[in-house]
Amino acid sequence: MSIMWSWMGSYGFGMMSGFRGWGEMMGGYPGYGYGMMGGLGLGVFGILGLIFGTIVIVSALMLNRKPEQHSTWGVLIVLFSVLSILGGAMGGFGLGLVLGLIGGILSITWKPTQPKT
Image 1: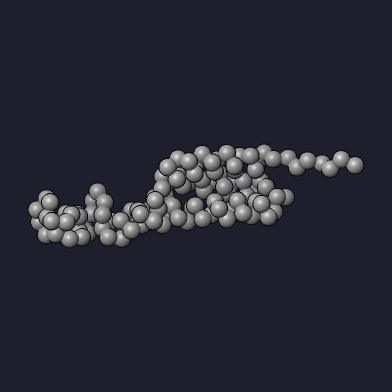
Image 2: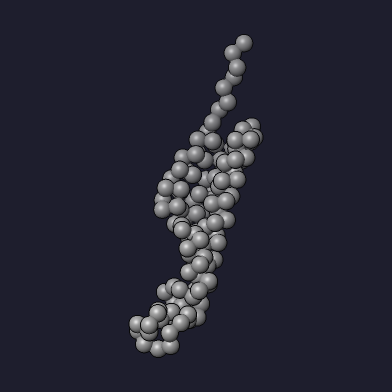
């Protein structure tokens, strides 16, 4: 989804981009328009969505490699899962947001078990 938003933003699609569509559906010059925002907003949001998703995945991998730092990685997962709402995928259609919050909260509150001797 974030890749789609990046692509659309780079070609000037968007509410304020001035895009008329193929075949001059609304009259005027056919082609890509660069209105007030020039589609820049959609491209930036798509890139942010990719970056935030990547940070969540890297944090989860680091949580798996270094479980003694579970609180740090859990906070990063929760933070960037919430920030993913601003990204192009709107939090992965909500599923990525919910799973990131559950996983991040579980990792923050996790207590290692003591081995029995």
